[in-house]
Length: 358
Image (cartoon, rainbow, N blue to C red; front, side):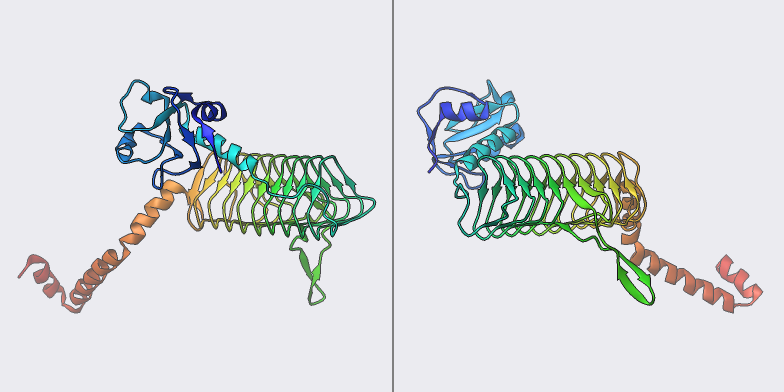
């Protein structure tokens, strides 16, 4: 059970206590479910109306609240960024949890030629093949497969049922959530002699430092060379990255994104949920692509795109606005067409009379 004093909370979060009071926090909570003994945070002073009936014991608020009287009866902590202060507290709490059993489980199958660094943990029924190298402090949970000549860096965390196939490389502080698959064959076939013939996929996958790949995502190995994911890039659940794709640093790929092979994605790119990228194109740095967009051609740096086919967001929104008016426009079109058909049935003089209102 959590048991932190106000002074300890201040030390962990870097937030300044409004006053030293005898208060102890037992749980982290949101504004909506705050209870006595809990701590939560407020990001904006425009939301102070939420505090009147707040039951929490401690509240983290923006530094701008200094000198103001807030309708809150508990203890206050002032932070430059309340959300980040709360995240630091979450990190502290998370680090206290015992998530794995240190050491090598007796059912793990580890090749004599594999090299394990200091303080490595390997869970039950995990297999580590010939020539694999595992860095210091890395944790491998049960039922994982580490293929031949795989390199895993320091302080990585590999959750259950992850597969890392032969020759792939993970640098330091990589996190692979349960069920991630790294280094499966790229989808490479050529049509020859009336059949789809498999092209050997003899490259690998390289994951940079501080990369996280979440559950059931697949990153295919390259046909030749490497499929590469840059430092600090985060890949959500159920994402497919094709062979020979290059992804830059600090890019976000949300759930169900699909990237076809040999696509280059820059630094700081955001691909929202279910975005699809066709192959053999370039997505520039800091591009943002809205949910369910289909991208069929390269996008220059710094652009915001949306739609199918994806286009600049402003243009896409204009098209959507017009599409919403189509039923009304079609009704007007039918009325005009009816008038035109009636006019066409009249003689020349009849048309003149009609136009003049006779």
